[in-house]
Image (cartoon, rainbow, N blue to C red):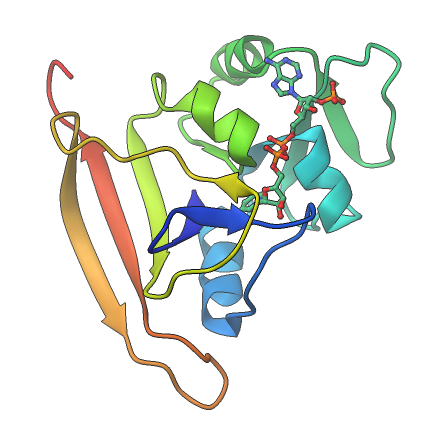
Amino acid sequence: MAARAKNNVIGKDNDLVWHLPADLKFFKQTTRGHTMIMGRKTFESLGNPLPHRDSWIVTRNKDYKAEGITPFHSLHEAIKAAEEKGLETVFILGGGEIYRQSMKIADKLIITEVHENFEGDTFFPEIDLQIWKEVSREEHRADEKNKYDFAFVIYNRKENA
Ligand SMILES: NC(=O)c1ccc[n+]([C@@H]2O[C@H](COP(=O)([O-])OP(=O)(O)OC[C@H]3O[C@@H](n4cnc5c(N)ncnc54)[C@H](OP(=O)(O)O)[C@@H]3O)[C@@H](O)[C@H]2O)c1
C-alpha cells in the first residue's frame, strides 16, 4: 500500500511530501485490525506505532527495540512469520527500500495516485503493466481539505506474472 506522485515520488527527507486527509482516512480504514510491515526509517518517520494494528519493523540491527513493535531482520523473515500465523492479509507500507524488495512477492498494489509531480528523494518502483492489471480506480477532485486531485487505484498481479 502506497501513495505515489505522478513522477513516483513517495517521500523527501524521511517524511511525506503532501498532506491529503482523505488518503490518511482511507489508509486508516484499510489497515485497521491488520498487520503492517514497514522499514525502520518509515517507522521512525511515523514516530509511534499506530493503534489498532500490529507494526512489524524490518531492520538489519539485531538490537533494535521500540515500544509496541515487533522487529524482523529481513522482509522474508516477516513474511514467513505472517504465513506461520495464518494471516490472510499483510500490508507492506514502505518505504522505498522495502517497496523495491516487495514488488516480486506482493499480489495486490493499493495505490493512492496523486496527480501532481513533487520533488523528493524516495520513489515507488515502476508498476509494470505486463505484470500488474488495474482492477479499480476511484477518482477524487481536489477540495478545500485535499489540495490535489488523486485516485485510489488497485492493481492485481496478473496470472502467471
Ligand atoms: N508515500 C508513501 O506511501 C510512503 C509510505 C512509506 C514511506 N514513505 C516515505 O519513504 C521514505 C522512507 O523510505 P526509505 O527507502 O528511506 O526507507 P525504508 O524502506 O522505510 O527503511 C529502510 C530501512 O529498512 C531496513 N531494511 C530494508 N531492507 C531490509 C532487509 N532486507 N533486511 C533487514 N532490514 C532491511 C533497514 O533498516 P536499518 O537501517 O535499521 O537496518 C533500512 O535502512 C520516507 O520519506 C517516508 O516518508 C512514503
